[in-house]
Image (cartoon, rainbow, N blue to C red):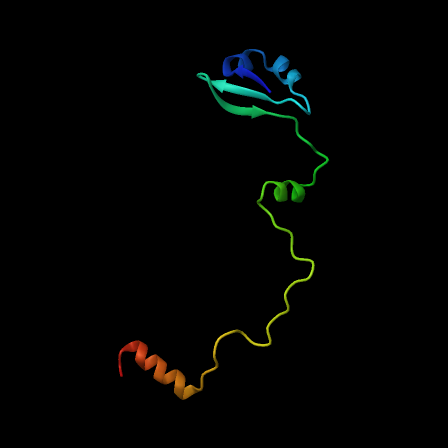
Length: 92
């Protein structure tokens, strides 16, 4: 990894970019602190592979979980639902 200044990148862009290789990045500093990394773009990797490598995408499971027969939770009769709503409203 090579360090260069922001000014050097500004004034010698072509020569700085020529130093970037597949195995060696160039780090650009500003006021002595690393701020940017210049690296080679790898076009052989697909967009999904890149997103997965970055942790921004998870592929679907090969065997998904089966759908439930009915949505979860208890089943209430109409009278039970009325009592629950009355309790929520404070009308008990």
